[in-house]
Image 1 (cartoon, rainbow, N blue to C red):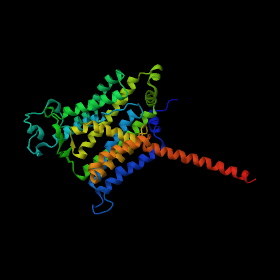
Image 2 (image 1 turned 30 degrees about the vertical axis):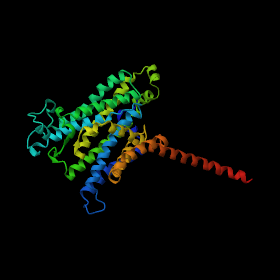
Image 3 (image 1 turned 90 degrees about the vertical axis):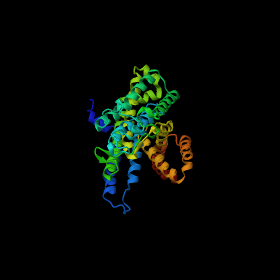
Image 4 (image 1 turned 180 degrees about the vertical axis):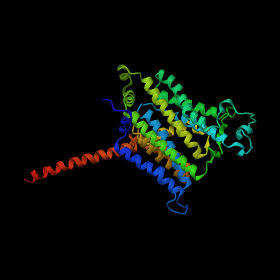
Length: 385
């Protein structure tokens, strides 16, 4: 008898996973906000605004890492263009944030400052409705997904895969970056969007808003992990992994890989768009640099460092790489790129399964040692005779 959907949904994540999520929920939605809002800044237990923003930003990166793992780790599709979907979500919400500035800008105009500077007389047609947070949410959810759907349909229908697909995705995000750099496109040119003031009438820099954005990022990260765990544990996920391992055999069995790869690809872009929308108000800026191929390559590094096809691995990888980046760019700014390169090379050579894989290997060795120990003890009495 087929189990109800809700039962299958919650059984997709193991008990240990739910316990970890419960602990994370308690800290992210209760402990950290209280330590930031209720504890005085002079206290050693106070969580600073810098820490709130940094961790919130990394959680957005972790969402992108999990989305990347869904298609790379489970579908075998290496994308070097996921930075585009992340940036599109950021720009979609950034348009709303720019409209919320109103006459508080440098030029005291209803138009964004960059449009006044470029002598624009009115908003472009695609800015229509951008003053509504609900319309901004629609754009965040649909634009990255639609771009991925169209691109993926033609790419997968043409059976482009492997390194060729990676190169095409890299070319796609590079072309988009060059387009957004142009002033006449209406997206702020190389400066992008910045100087945000408020969200839904509330100051974007207030402690309450910072905590709210932090909590939303944490909740979205947890939802992404649970959703992706359900996806990869379902029949859809099993077919997806079969396509990764032997696509020709899957086709021989009567499945069409196009539908499965396209669905996973679009879902991955959808999650990246949401992450981008949560990221922009926390860092206070979005520009075409977020679409650079280097950023998309770094996303792949997070997944590789944490461990492919694990879901939790990209979260760990995103935190390791970005916390290290935050430290090294301050302590040794000129050597950060060398550290990143060494980290990627080291993981490739000595940790092909990432940090999570190393942990799994240690647990397996420990279990084997415990299993062998009783057997050795049982032999000792006979040996004494």
